[in-house]
Image 1 (tube, rainbow, N blue to C red):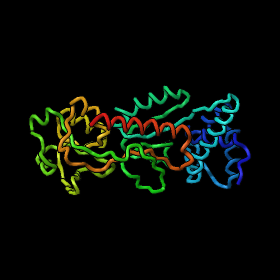
Image 2: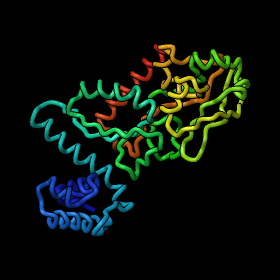
Image 3: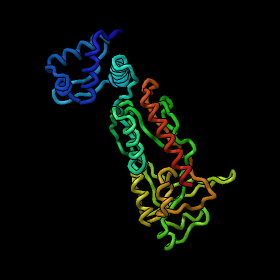
Image 4: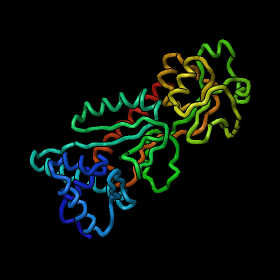
Length: 304
């Protein structure tokens, strides 16, 4: 199996990214007929269909989804190699599509990414802020920043903050009205702000202390699938939240939130950089991972 014309591969990538063969043709200043012929030639060489096309829609086949990340890397690597040869210097130039959690992304990581782009101005980022887990096999996402251990063992997970945990918190105003729980067991007497991921509401909170483990079923009048909304409710004084320590550092430092039951550790919430294939670990991704890892560690170290 051999691809004879890299231009055909470029048309495939642009068509998949834009969702339109005609849009890809315009970007390359080709006629739609020439672009269509190029795709057919590529599919014939590979012996497989890469795109399912109709008059109204276009989508990748399973084979196309598997080829797309590798095709992007091949074209980007060739472009950078030519640039390095012509200029005599290493080029950090890339286009990365990143998915990340809403609260952490919006309130901390956007600033860290600004720093990264200032250092490497030829990198382009497309950011997806959502607590819904992106399907990095099917969606146009190169890497994802995620809490927790990936359910799919086939994914590549590089740690950013492996020791991160959930902590209990509430605002001074809420505690002035309702008092502070002396232990996790007393959470049943409080309004707890719960988080929903997919169809599952996180309403059984676990805690650990000196080998002891306890689990508390909590309740309250607010549930959201957006972690930023849960944090904002806590700051506004509507109840007690159990959230990632990394998310809470600015609010804990400013006094907007107070950490509760500090002698108990909450559930583990490791933060990782996730990708589908090790071939996606380009020099740019390696640099970005190291930058984010340092910022995560510094933030937690300075926040407690």
